[in-house]
Image (cartoon, rainbow, N blue to C red):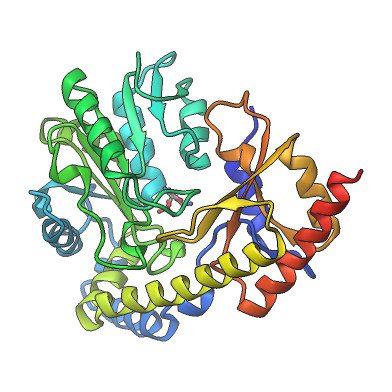
Length: 365
Ligand code: PMP
């Protein structure tokens, strides 16, 4: 099996001289380093030693309350006691998968999906398929999708929800990028419309920083116990130090202001990449992203987009091959996920110019 996420993380790790339009990492200049450092010092000096001690498997009460409050603002009926803190959204997905799937099950996905989830399903012997027929559960990114950076249409949202209701199918809602919607507040989560079916997955990795590894899972109420047992079996509890640090940080800083700044920052970069791409690579089709870190560009050419990546790397630019995101690997249409998150406007321009040269060479090969 291809380990898709590993390849992506590696193309995202900037090699010298390479302009990184791959990887989809957050911009390090947005990490609130000084404020986190001050919180770190405070929690380390707390005489209780809580930051270095074991805590509860579900995580700290304060942070769970903070997460529940944010979900309530978006229409979901959730309280602190429904939230399980995990090691990033990735572990929330792993916990949900452990409870829900048996080897040989199928999971219904969107045609292009998040490679870290596709890998996870693969390691558990669960087959991702496009659509919702004959599956054990559904996995979707309704608010802001990775790779498209777009929200589901209301028709599609309705269709997934109706199907989940009709077949009483568990619905894994990956909300990782929801807060990074550029125009307007985050979308209403599916959790608000199907509380007893939805396994809602969130994270601070995109808005704050991934290094702390803090995410969460809200399971359907009757599944809460089983989810908590699965989480506890994996690693006992989330990282006490990260949770103490975050609670201190969130109590002293305006998180909404921080997210608003990140939205403006990524929006500017998204607009720039879209403009330069339209100018320099008019044969790439894409729809302007509404949020997140990336856009999805398709071409009319067939082939293996990993070969195109080899050409691109030789020209000094990276991207993520569309194949890493495809649920149905029979499609051979060349597509690219391009990240606008980490490179400045000037470097985006240069990156797209390099990509255009690589594209011409690849087509004329
Ligand atoms: N879901 C999606 C859609 C993602 O893009 C990512 C990060 N690449 C994750 C989940 C995992 O995020 P975390 O860092 O919180 O584990």
